[in-house]
Length: 395
Image 1 (spheres, helix red, strand yellow):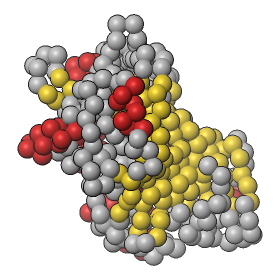
Image 2: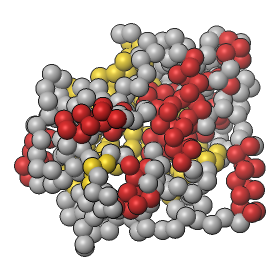
Image 3: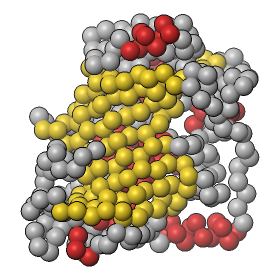
């Protein structure tokens, strides 16, 4: 498996672990090129795949979990969470730059229709940008951008612009994130988190009409955490397995040799997966993240769940654009919150609201932020109509 290689080619390998003009130019030569799939985990929206994905991100919405419930909805069948497309292909590939750490930086999602049970799924990805950057993370780092389109048969059901930061090893005069010990909760804090998690509000079958929503309305918050290795493993199991890092056992060795993407442990000298920092605090600290950390796409999924919980079974999540600002470490709790900032009638057929979304951890740091667009039914113009025109809402 050639991570991010052009179709039909093996990616050329620049100097290992180095970001320089040559390695950047090598990557930029691939802009506009269609890339090989590198993270295909599912190719069908089977009941099991939908169930495993929903479980992995902690989404208990019955529209995505209960066949009998979903069959009685206006859709007439089990639906998948919109973000299940992460499991078809991860938007935001890692192209070239062997030995240079990838960190997921965000996704700009647009959906045009629901994914329904038994839908066949595939994706096509094009590299759209590879931009050199500088700042507190490193004197020189790279932001890779790619556009992934997702298909049910020949129809585009959604698309996503993905962003991947490529960062060199920690430099003496550059700071990423300071290492910090796991947060120690009081019993009352744990009780508050568990009460919020068990009391998550899902609107369900009661329609949320566009006319009843006002700018300034706040969405019921959702909480995920305190983050544990079990939560991370569940996210991997539902969303991607070990595909982003080449796979387990001999598959991982072949991928490592083909791409040069690995990191060398300061403790053991082993050539470890670039994803080892998600499960190993020392590996996470070695790359400058500050400890073991979450799968950023899963955190983005949690924010989408907040919106789909709120909009009711009659709504449709059209856009969900989120920038990852900082890591969510093992032991952290994430509180997603949303506020309606705009509502519009785009045409006689479509009414929608824009929601500002934000994730904060238990010490008040904003770890992700962006905005979502949800189509809602209208008493005047009727139910949400799908598929959504590509030109309905400007990105």
